[in-house]
Image (tube, rainbow, N blue to C red; front, side, top):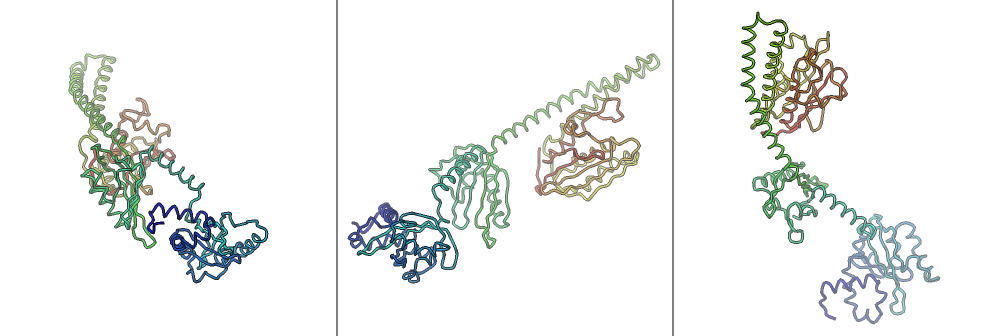
Length: 522
């Protein structure tokens, strides 16, 4: 037998030795290969212990020393019950004596789970297999011990494997892959879907800590690296959208989520993250933006072209009214008045459409805007209406948000003007502007004591030219004010909602995302 064994031969012999617990090796072979057997037992990962028929430990291997915390000199000569916890410690000698007397095995030849005791007193589960060996006419028992807390049995492994397959299927269906960077070892783990998202073969590509430079668009890679650096330095999560460049040149849009992992000392030792492929949604969003721009351009062009003939109609009806003032009977004068009013309404609708289409056309510059100043500016524009209705306006201290000051003034002007318009008969309007506490959004509540809005109309009121009251109602308007308000909120990446639970009038919620970014939107 060669002194130098290949790794595979070594593993095969190791398996053979530990699996059979030496009971198939005869005495002569043990004598001839004593140094070889010692090499195997000293280097196997399983704990090996040999005892005599009285339960006295005759030998242990290094793995047994590591598992139980003893040096071999502390174990040899002691009863093996020192390694066993609970009832098995007291009964261990009886198991051997019963086997010697009856031949009936309770442990010997049968693997079983029981609790073991570490030198320091720690109790931990083990799997114990014992076989008998006869050496020079003497009976011994050889035990192979596995720490059950560090192994997975077949059933557990199959369950784990099934869960992993379900996770991989779910990640593939959702276009989500997860990754982890071990900062101490410099190791990177990718789930299967990560390879698919990045467009590489898992059998031909090994991810490394610098994978951001390999896959991300040159304009975006630096941003990702900065986000990761900040996560490590400040121990904070990150979340942003970026462009990923696959090896074939295809661009994918990726939502990146990441968070640092810290050890017991509070030091960042790893970064765990998720990639979500949002390319399809991004393409839909870009197409929708293009369509919206086309529609806005169409509306602007048509509205602009209609203004000239309507202006001519208004002028002509005005001239006719003046020149035929004394020649028209009551019915004819009524028709002339209807023509004049209709032309005026059409002119107003076109102006409203133009105003609506201009919101979002071109870049909208954002800056840090104090909403207290915005509300004050809106109230100044409504000074006359407030005085005429004897309204009371109560405003809490409002936050500073990133936004467009002009659009925000128009937003609050529209909202307060609506509250003044739809007041209850005989009751002076009271309007409150307050802040609802919320973790991730600034929620501004504008509530009044007016006639209110039924919950079933909570969406209709935000549609263009939708009015809840007929022409004969005292509330004048074209049904475009709230549509403009919603469009302004969408331009600020927020939204506006009717509070359906408010019973004392109408209450609207302006929902602004909490962010400190200064940006432009279109």
